[in-house]
Amino acid sequence: MSAKSRTRTPARELLFGNLWEYDPAPETASPHLQDRYTLFVNGKWVAPKTKKFFPSISPRNGEILAEIGQAGAADVDAAYQSAAAAFPAWSKLPGAERGKYLYRIARLLQDRAREFAVAETLDGGKPIKESRDFDVPMAAAHFFYHAGWADKLDCVMPGKKLAPLGVVGQIIPWNFPLLMLAWKLAPALACGNTVVLKPAETTSITCLKFATILQEAGLPPGVVNFVTGAGETGAAVVNHPLAKKIAFTGSTAVGKGIQRALAGSGKKLTLELGGKAANIIFEDAAIDQAVEGIVNGIFFNQGHVCCAGSRLLVQESIASSVLQKLKIRLRSLRVGDPMDKNTDIGAINSLKQWEKIDELVKTGVAEGAELYQAPCVLPQRGYYYAASIFTNVSLSHRIAQEEIFGPVLSVLTFRTPEEAVEKANNTPFGLSAGVWTDKGSLILKMSSELKAGVVWANTYNKFDPTSPFGGYKESGFGREGGKQGLLEYAEMV
Ligand code: NAP
Ligand code: MG
Image (tube, rainbow, N blue to C red; front, side, top):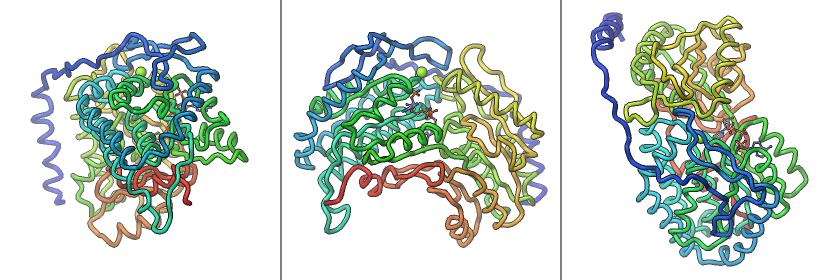
């Protein structure tokens, strides 16, 4: 890019940036919420034996959306007993019949897409345009994809048959509640397993609404059971003796604890944990596209993304122009009510997460990094955080090492591809990375040297049910999606 065109951009921004504003564009569909949700066990709604309920709060404004049943050990046991009772018939169904249920579930979710998108946004705080255009359609796509596998399991590994494992326990986080549920349920059911699943405490609503889809689809009772609650409920799911496999998505700290708890138990385990991805921009990249990729990489879903491009590595020769463009782009990002269709960055999922982000940002400033926050007016109620960029970051800073899981980008520079690889790999995590360059050969070199389960080239945060996703090092092990994901829910016979 010539120096002339670089200087033109700020001028355009000054011209338009202050002159026009969007009108409010509120999403108005009803999420059809109940005041209170009990547990979903053996195809029925059952009150928790603990007799306890906890509130699900909307981070959009701090209001209580519904009360959620708190499952104790006896409730988790009932869920496992029902899943174990359902297993023989479900696993013996011809694959084509299991596939029909999965197709039905996918279609019912599509039919109720708008309602689910609104519920997801209210409960979790993500912008409605993301839940509408990404979370819900992708969740349906996972059921469609795995429905297609259900009658073709003999083709996954030539010469081998796949047998289900039995009852699987699944635990999911709050950043993509419905989508993580789909990633977990669809392959487990396609292979003929039955399931006990626990959603995250702050985002149980779309999981419980999903139970109504399972009922509408006529899924046999006990094939899927939902137990809600916090970490203790999760621990009861992990430690139940009937579980043949545990599939966990969440933080590295909890994942390590689960791995320790399961050592020697014979249970199969997959862990999808945290990340601190490098998004690497070379000087020959298409800079404007790369700037969009940086924005998408870190500000999608408020940065509550395990594979977020939270460390920007930019080649020194273009660093100042990339940063200038990035700061200008940030000023046009709309932070605010997630129910507004024009919102780019919605609400932080919970007060606890807001405090964690703020603490790390303050640490970044204290350690000497330079903070830029785009000027914006944040709503008075609810949990909101301005899009934030740190420059002058060194590798030893906490903001360069720890997962912030918020809309905060740490910028580092490099001179050579070798230095980029070294800096990118200088983290305990290994989930994802991005490479932006004009040269195919450099893409191939970088993707083979980066220690990351997924490497995107000239794009970021692209997902597809056919494509396996997962990490290594402290980002966990096992894959979700594709043929590889199916194999995590079956044994070869
Ligand atoms: P988290 O605290 O580890 O929680 C994840 C799930 O585990 C929640 O359902 C949680 O319940 C439950 N849990 C908590 N303590 C437990 C215990 N001792 N035993 C069993 N289950 C327990 O993680 P989070 O803060 O919700 O999620 C964010 C993390 O997930 C980030 O680190 C992110 O990178 C990671 N993540 C990874 C992927 C991936 O594919 N690699 C995808 C998405 C997110 P409660 O929340 O109800 O307490
Ligand atoms: Mg909530």
